[in-house]
Image 1 (tube, helix red, strand yellow):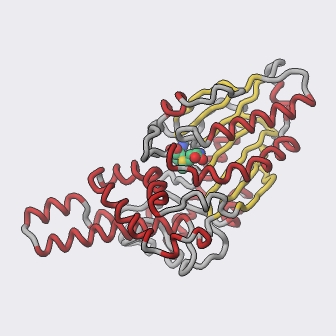
Image 2 (tube, helix red, strand yellow):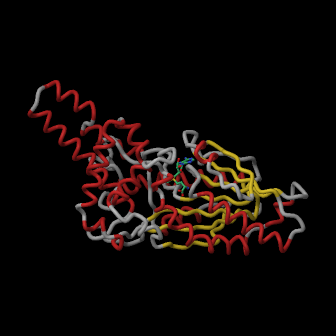
Length: 368
Ligand SMILES: C[S@@+](CC[C@H](N)C(=O)[O-])C[C@H]1O[C@@H](n2cnc3c(N)ncnc32)[C@H](O)[C@@H]1O
């Protein structure tokens, strides 16, 4: 995610993700009130310690309101049932390159908790055994640990030539992505199973796609990413034309910057499941039960009113990844072209055509 809080930052360009929080809030509060097992909070310490973690917190501005209402909801539950209000600890977790400085310099002063940074990959162990009472993760589990190998293998039927993400019409590519996603969610759950106390809860907000939608007249988050892929391809083709008609020197200069082969070999490490796909993966877990699953019909869809806002949103999320692969020189041109393509597309400009969904899942750690 783009660091800091400037005009291109994630802080300033992530109101889309925030759209779901108001809808998710009463559901999560209700689950805490009715299902969180609070005995564990006092089991190791008579004064009580309650631990909450956000996995994939980024710069924190979307996380803070959630951590606030989760601590308040647990507090309310304890007020009626326990003599002592526990000490709340919130672990803000993200990859080691995350901008934790921006997060820690903007912590809300009226928070009810002590805050700790936990840098690391959430597919592995991050927290002490048997210590976590409530886990949360929003808009982060779509991130794969690696690109499925078959997708970059020229000899495989799943080779994803000319695209940067799966498309519905390439079955083998979709399957390779789904397999990787399943493996990653399983690793995530395996680690959380060790860290969570029995009876603890976990809430996920997972960006996804409906079971059925029509890619001719509708779109979802993967469609936006495929459109970005077409911009990369256009840029590579443009550069090859220059290569045919200009001098050899220009050819080498431009080809080094963005070649078609380079675009062919690039794939995005994201997967956006349909609800049944996610449910099937979660049901395989021996450690958690699914307590609640709600489909939120794109609560953020009116938060990106213009092509500019949409391009800025994707740039804030993808710039680092693209820069690491293609270099920073192409980024302005790429997102300028992307903005133009979005503006020229009546399908993408009408928010009612956006069929993206968010899946809200609440899991409970089984008691061993
Ligand atoms: C789109 S942001 C979501 C941020 C925030 N949760 C929100 O709702 O706005 C996804 C975050 O997940 C983090 N992330 C992705 N893969 C991760 C991993 N394997 N381990 C830890 N964090 C990861 C990214 O670094 C990024 O900050």
